[in-house]
Image (cartoon, rainbow, N blue to C red; front, top):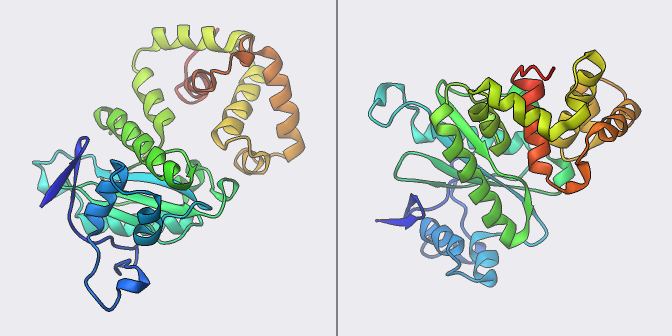
Length: 284
């Protein structure tokens, strides 16, 4: 039996951890195992309240959750090139360890995807996706779409739907998108296919920061990395291989050049920076 979940059907089966063991509530170990697929479905569709989510699914208010969708880039009809769901589950376990989180809660879908949630102690403890892309080599054709980390019960839902949105955007450009990506990565890959329209967008969003020259390119790259790690100066310094104080200085200089930085449209700014710095868009 399967239950429709807004585009993905989750089988009525127990959740599996990265080590292949079932997560079951302590009070149920001696009896029948809970139907985790049904529980996940009911919680996402708000048919299970907060008490049920905490006691039966183990979702905690004090945890940060990171939603993942693991999928095959090969078409469904090409069985020879598609990885088995167990391979995706193993990768979910690797990613959970890489993110510094607990063993993931996972739910396979009928389409062969794996929906996963990783619980982490804090948002600041989660390394950037770029770091894990360099550390982990997935099986050929595997892609992982990540949501933004969110807290508590509502965060469990929100990060999942963000991961699914990223997957929907990434599937048509699966050959070009990074294997581990978020919505911004997928949007950049999609938009960069039209160089002229992309250049116009970058210039409009970045203002003077879109100018030519090595210094402005350095400032754009620093601000891009800084925003991609959610303003974590230490993480940005690690990726850029510069001192944290240098990150602070460059970010301050970059912000002076962005004309509409106070508009609050952080998504637009991040998109423009990713396009300018990673898609080789000429802004002169």
